[in-house]
Structures are given as structure tokens and as C-alpha cells.
Figure 1 (cartoon, one colour):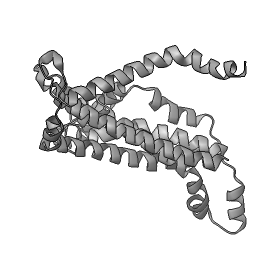
Figure 2 (figure 1 turned 30 degrees about the horizontal axis):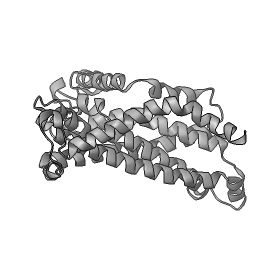
Figure 3 (figure 1 turned 180 degrees about the horizontal axis):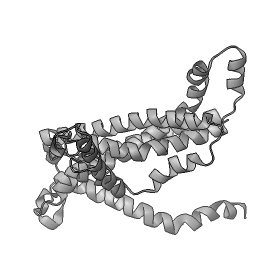
Length: 289
């Protein structure tokens, strides 16, 4: 009877887990088999690592990989810095009157495709800011406004990610700050520490685990996201998910193993980030004990 109650939750979850894990595992296995050259429907039956070798030695692939890491790291690092600062400022503000709900939640619930349209309407050379600059005489024509979209540094992509990720990180850190025990800060103030010393010596170390996990989450999302770099990214280099999509669109099915190699590399990086997230989460658990 005792085992029956212990197994009941797992039995109830079984149908859902079969669907979720079935689709995930089947996709991974089929993708891996195709990446090593086993795709019988088009006559590929020999297992080989040549597709991995060719893809990883390709300059286009390396450029895409570096570009994806670059936009993911820059946007995640800036989001962490600005998100923590935003959360701390709102936390210190006594009269909030629901300002945190507007600042944090509104950008989060807006879909990325809408965020792309907002950034395009604001920052393109025919956008609102370029028109304001032209009206004020800062530029002689709208075409002289700096090109911030579709350029090789991914500025438009990074700005879009910042608009979405700063509120996310701010909301996570703000929740931790609200539930944090203030005894340590009070003791530090009693011993003569000023506000800056209390933040860097007491508050920041206490919220650091949540900052690390938030960074991993937004980095993983940015690294694997497709729609923002597809719509605002440069022609060359392409972000890795965009390159995988283009390779997948190749009408020659014998080209499919190259796509699956890129997908396997994206999956491998994602698994590493999941492992890092779990390690960071264990650290958080220690802080909460």
C-alpha cells in the first residue's frame, strides 16, 4: 500500500512524459543518426564522421559559431548588469506603487516577433529616431543615420535581446532581494559600512547564485533563438540557428547530414548549459538552507 502511494504521481505523469520524452528522444536519435551519415531513405547507409569533420573545418560554420557566442554573451552580460541595477533601484525605492509590475512584466509578455518590429520601427534608417535626428538637424538625411540593423556586429539583435532579457533578470533578482534576510545588511551598517560597501560585500554575494542561473538561462535562449537573428541579423555571418535553417531548406536531401551536425552541436551546447544550470541551482539550495 505504501509503495502504491509513492508510485501514484509517477503513474499519473507517465502519459505526459511518454509524449514529451518520446518526441524529444526520437528527434535527438534521428538527428544523431543522420549526422553520422545514416539516412536510408536517400541511400545513405554508411556510418561516417566526415560530415562532422567538414562542418567543423568550414569557415562559414566557425564564423556562425563565433557570431552566435558573441551576441549571446554580450546581450546576456549587459542584461545581467542592467537587470541587477534595475532590480536593486526598485527594491530601494520605498514608494513603488506597482512600478515593478510594469517595468518587469510588460516586456516579458510581449512576443519576440513584436519586439523585433518595435526595434525596427525605432532604429532603422526610416525609423522614428532617424526622423527625429533629421528633424533636429543632427543628420543631413535619414540615410546618414547610423545603420544599426542587419550589420555585422549584430547591434539590432543585441538591443532586442536586452529589451526582453533585462526585465527577466530584474524580476528574478528582485524576487530574491524581497525574500532576502536583511540581518546581514543591518549588521554591516551597524559596523560602519556605507551603502556601496553593503551592496558589494553583503547583498551581491547573496544574490550571486540567482544572477548566475539567470545568465545561463538567457545565454542558452539567445544562443538557440532563431527569429530575432533571422529578421535583424546580417547576411554574413549568420547566427548558428539561422545557418541550420538554411541548410535544412536545401532541396537535396543528401545534404541533410550537414544540417543535423549543426543541430547536434547546438544540442551539445544546450546540454552543457543545462548541466551548468543544475550546478548553480545546487549552490542556491545551499544558500536557502
